[in-house]
Image (tube, rainbow over all chains, first blue to last red):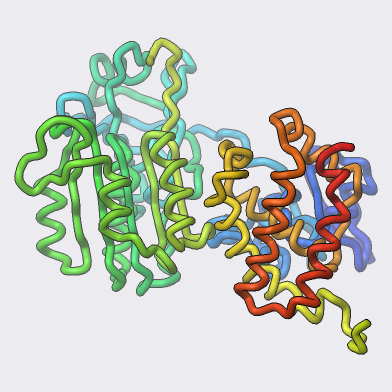
Length: 327
Length: 125
């Protein structure tokens, strides 16, 4: 008896005692692979219909397992499967702008309502598409309790085609297209006692605020430490809201940080990642979220790992700036 | 020679031992200023997975590595100046990792010998 593996336009028959990887390679389908024993993770693919066998997810990060990713070399199918090699093509849904507010001089809180309800996690991102096809990625800043409503923090970049348009011209009532949610930087309520460290720069607060809302909603019991950084105080926002949240939840701690200029009372001086690591040097068994400037994200990922965090517990989203006109 | 019939991989403790070793070994490598520049721009999770595949091989475990893979996988680093001293540093980190895990010296020597056998392929000679 053989099972069918569907991949794009291909239909591959997988024999008994044959892995998905072996079946694909036998049919000369080009798929990256390496060790063929579940260690190197080169042959990771995604099941588009239903969960893959649990053994085929050995060693994968929880968010990858949650999204039905698996290792083709470890997978002996139990039924017919439909799989994809990379993440699925962007599918867009229509949405309408229902609110615009400034969070600070340079950051816009944009809220849209989608035609269809979306299956997303706070911390994931979507691609927003303007009528002329211009696309930019933005993180979802609200928790998944609002199934059709999505909020984004859009930082105005000088010369940024999308962000300037969103700030200046996009109006309440206008339509915009929203892609399916993507990305792996989000909260799963699978260990309510784990301590969480969240570090964000600039509008990196957007996904982190959503993740915190989600964690508190699930009754997270471990400590939750948020460090939000910017060059100056004017680049921070939601300071009072976060301070209020810290008063309401005794396991939530908030540290705003500025890297240049004067720090006002209640604000730490230094880069958010440096302040965080100096306050919390031992990160063994912590879960860590890093969002914002790519240099901060990459540097802190390494630092957190060297300070004891497990790589599987580090969730990162580096915000790469699209416009080439920017420094 | 050892009277023990179990394979090196089994004597070391199989996959669980590899996982424990990767955790220590990769941190040592990243913290080692002699070699960490070669890892500056790598995806850490992919790199950790590669380290696991490498340690599995060095532990005498199941693997599909060929000399050609080793050459291909390190060619860009050889161009950046990867040489014997860097290879030595990696082997040293591997040995100290195993010492930290209280692995008997006779087994450490066997692991080091397997790692050593890849030297010419890694350095593309």
